[in-house]
Image (tube, rainbow, N blue to C red; front, side, top):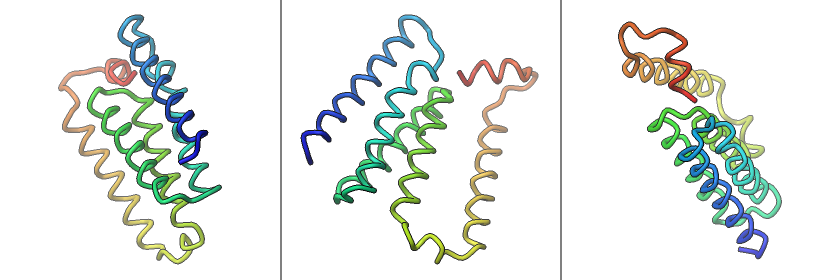
Length: 141
């Protein structure tokens, strides 16, 4: 771990805490509150994988992404849900590298189909009866 890694960890942590505080105090949109922290943390971890490929970068990036997705899903926040998905998928693609083309096409289709089905089931189970589309969109801010 380099000094730059330590500083970027601190900057990411501060950005996420400030975003959380802004959301609690001012009620800002999740995109405004969390985008900077997700952007800095995600690009730092994925960039570290590409440049140096240290042992800790892949697990840290996957953990960062999964925690963001879980937090976004739990609190119904779009920015962490989308940002965490991008970080997790980007880290996976970087980790696979040239082996990406070796994965059979049916695997990609099956994974995409399962992801879509899981998303549809989750949305259907959590939506309220008689809720308008606008109310659903407002819930995911």
